[in-house]
Image 1 (cartoon, rainbow, N blue to C red):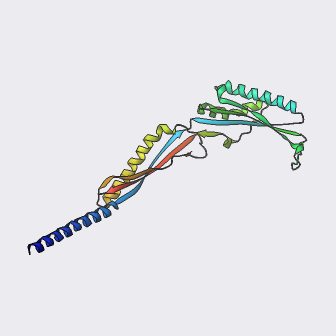
Image 2: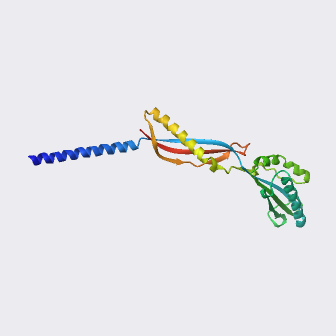
Length: 230
């Protein structure tokens, strides 16, 4: 009889222990699913700190030697114009002229009366964005020196290269915004926002604020965060 009570007590204890384990497992399993996934956005407008400005022009003629001399002469005038207005020599690149022999192209319908078409380019790459923007507005002054610069507004490129300087602050801001959204959700669901389960930083994007001000950039990042709900 004592053996029977002993065995029954062991079985009862085992059942109780098993029940506790199952209860804990279910609580943990269902509790782990009580999460809220939110996004945090951070945006900032910044000024471009690098501008790449190509000054392109074209020449037509029948004598290559004369064309090269003319291009060299005009390149010197352009470089002089840039330097006299605050652009440093290291910021100026003179590209070798590109020559197209129109008589050698059987598919070209050359009605100009000239054999050679030469394209030349002087490029400015500068961190002095404001000064370059002023010169872009004055590039018509080169016409007085016989240089017809092609005014393609989309050829000028503005870039922002100091992303690493603002990354930490923007990530912090995006995380705070995500937590605010999570707290609002927790409040509405009569819960409390817990710790972060997992988080992922989205890609930073840098775009023109609008088509009329390409020198002003909009930097944007979105973080995805999962919070526990308690």
